[in-house]
Image (cartoon, rainbow, N blue to C red):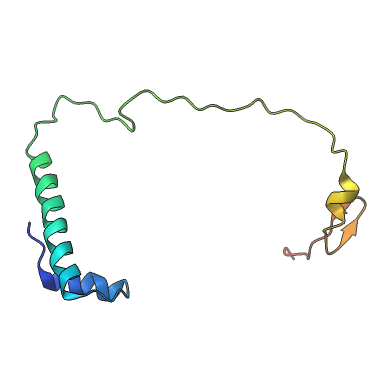
Length: 95
């Protein structure tokens, strides 16, 4: 699928980008090359390839949750617009 100058101008208008004629020509060529490459990938036989979310195995690195007491509640509550019983007081949103 080829990208036309009209396509680039339309997308630039939607994105509110002011592009020069040289930029429109450049982006037309670049976007067409990207779509040509994507088209070549569609020709590959992937019937026996299992779907993956990552090319390599991934492992989340998470720390263990630990309950700790806060030592500086006065400093934290000093920034609160309203405070009640050592907690932030917020407007009621549920009736």
